[in-house]
Length: 440
Ligand SMILES: [Mg+2]
Image (cartoon, rainbow, N blue to C red):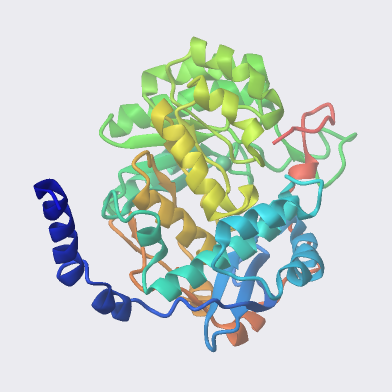
């Protein structure tokens, strides 16, 4: 044996005998014996207005199961069917540890894919598999993604009002609670925090009575005036955001982006509907207002171009809508080298499990930008035990394994969906004065 070989083998032997001895390490790990999916259940509940859909994946290990969010509140029943009738029989008996393999398998199992119903159904299972993985590892999910890049997720709160002074007061109340980022929305009349409101049927006798009137020209002229008022009164020491909710046309977007420049928004959300994604090149070249986009995106082909060409500053998809945590992690990683930051959709039509998935990514991804806040009411916190803690405008992950959230199935039954009023959120009844539909 030459000297070099001796040293190499000697050091290997030393490693095996001491620091890298496998026996104590293996003893410290939780059991990772192969297990199977034994059942999949769907829990429907509505402790707030939204029709929440959560998926429970049960395993062959007693007491081991996971929770995932599959909430697509506007078409909630279709997601329930997709999980119960299609994914459940497809998955029973499979190994829940193989998250990526199962995701890919579910994704192509319908042959035609990529729509919101199937993506949300897959997400319900996929997020539940991460919960199971975290419980098996004895770690919160953010640890499985590489651990923390920051101590908490900075949140933006929602402020609105039907006068500029009301919006200002609403912002001040969030500032007093310690928030650094606040979205400002103006309600021109009653209802509709995106600039639409109720309407007077006497003035518009040809419109259906359920109409939410939206006048895009008025809207794009009003919003810069609102921000002038807010900056005059509040100064520039607070980050302000605004959501157009896709409701204007390309020329109006060019106008509004430029008109907002003096007010230095943190971001301008969803200026155009996803069908106009090819216009972002022109929009980007005409305005310095930072652009957030993606709430309605379903699949990578919708964001590849605008991310790699750096036409947007923030990507803000609904995580269950794109298929769950894994697709979100891949999207964040794709955005990072292009300087595009994340701003996951975080409204009340996203269960506390879905929010926990967003926060796990917020903590683990370097290119986190901001997180939309939703404060769950008391009934929701009863149903979802362990809702994430919010303090001083920051949201903190649970440190318990998995999502650290337990769904109380008995309490969930106390808040059944209201089937009488389907949750369509007026998307199909928002019209211009001539009766044509406004596309969100
Ligand atoms: Mg939005």
